[in-house]
Image (cartoon, rainbow over all chains, first blue to last red; front, top):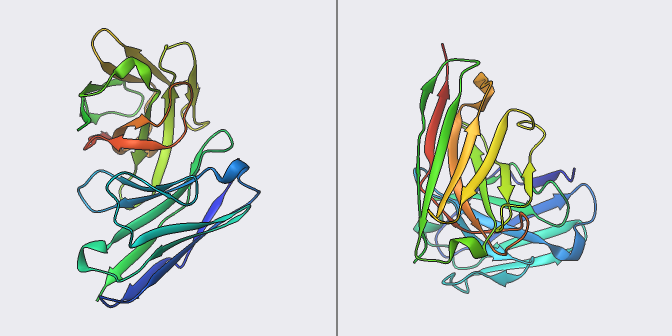
Length: 108
Length: 121
């Protein structure tokens, strides 16, 4: 199975700054089948990005995804306090689909 | 807006069984694959099981294969997860998740609020 490693483990930034989250796969992700989710305590996960770079419905354009092969990035520009959450990447190109361990984003 | 409502969680002893349900509404249930994803306390997300829209094909993580059974009743717009031989490491919040497409686990466009399963003596 494909192992996804996310870095950093925790990211602490100020409002208005840009956040860059990384997701590295143990082998190439077929067809860039990679998604990003936002998870806040007590809430359901929320799909942000699919196909490595396509924004899900209703997601602000502050959120963008990029990458291919084994290296993927989620960028959040102009951070807002409500962006504080844990972010997970998921690959769905190979069975079983797998998640990364998450990056905690703290807004100071 | 898609609605997914999980139920059936609770406290169960190791070796016991539990059946989770997920009632879906506001979309054509039979047209989409459905999944269960769990999150253990303080841990990350883990995909558990998926089922195609026609019920023909089921998928399982190795960690639950042979112990859990996923099923769906398209006439009732309901997804199920029968969990047998439960272990302490199955303790988690279990989320029902609607898939992007019809046939197999892909990415998850909508999620329920989750139901907590605690396996403890």
